Amino acid sequence: MPLGRFGRPGLIGMAARTAVVAGTATAVSGAVAGHQQRKAYERQEEQAYEAQQQQAAMDAAAAQAVQNAQYAAPAPAPAAAASAGGGDDLMAKLTQLAQLHAQGILSDDEFAAAKAKLLA
Image (tube, rainbow, N blue to C red; front, side, top):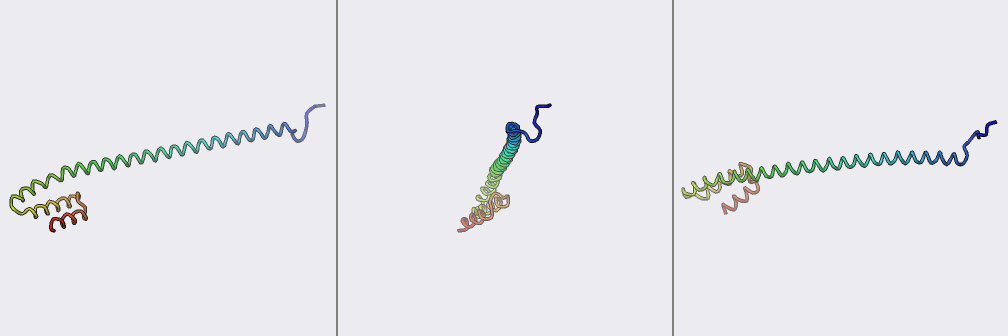
């Protein structure tokens, strides 16, 4: 006659089965949490890279605008100096303001304020 038990497992068998199930659940949940953390970190890195690229693009655009302003601003000055020799300094300054406004260096509000200041 065999000496094994038939039917439900004993107390030790139940404890072993519970430990295996709990250990598997812990391992699976740990793997899922690790995967989620990696994905969150990758998303954060991607957002930081995009923000850095946007900042670099804005810095480049600002540097280009400054460079354009440096080259554009002195160009009207000789015209104003030549007109000043003619005796109509106000007209030369208004022309210079209009050129700066047409080039986009001065906004509408800045142009209006500078023109009002000259005419006052």
